[in-house]
Image 1: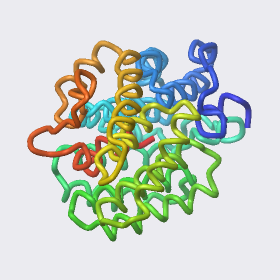
Image 2: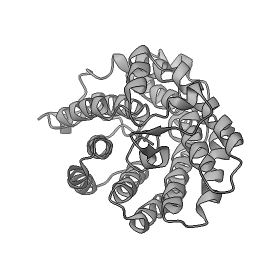
Image 3: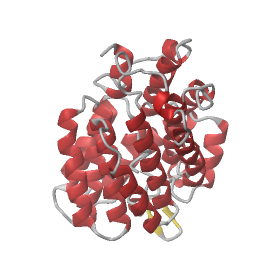
Length: 315
């Protein structure tokens, strides 16, 4: 695995990928966009993806669209993410998708099974954020029917399964899904997927009033801060800030710093979507108060898909 792939889906999530984001090889640009999104650099990721969502290869185009959808979802824009995930699924429905270019030797992450599963998982996460839990369950079932997916894709399915159960008021079932994701990370070299799995498990445990939740969330926060993953740092810190006995001001400062980093590096469209989102805790950027939106705490938002994002953006 070269350093670019290690940045996107491995042990170097904070590696600079600027040169690869401008590579003439569209596959390298996609990997760079994935890494940039994990680093919270959404504007740079959107630029790298701009020429890929209409690529002639439907597999690559589909993966590019679901990546952009994931970044939009991380900013709380589930409706717009749904448009991109729908486009991704349509590309995979094209008659020629099975004859798309073979990337499997040098770029095993670019494959038709993962592309189709990613689109379905993304649509399920979008549906959760839009309050359409029945639709999310049907999409989740369809995603789980896709054979021969990678460990990365299987982890994403477990994430959205946990989010569906949280949104349905079934925290114990959510814990089971999240624990499967954590176990699967032993088969996946991605630090980002390990951190996000801990984040989702921590939210599920906290929702179930399980005392283990704080330690799991603290582990996620520490790793996100150390490895340059602010989209995962702010929700981890924000949930910790709301726990009984927590150093609220300390965690709010951590959350605010990470969220401001992300918003300042979002593209103009992304910032507008974030400001309009009922899920993004934009009040935290303007004040030290733990935000509430529509009578819901951010923890409710984390369990309905805004946090992957899905704890920020399923990718």
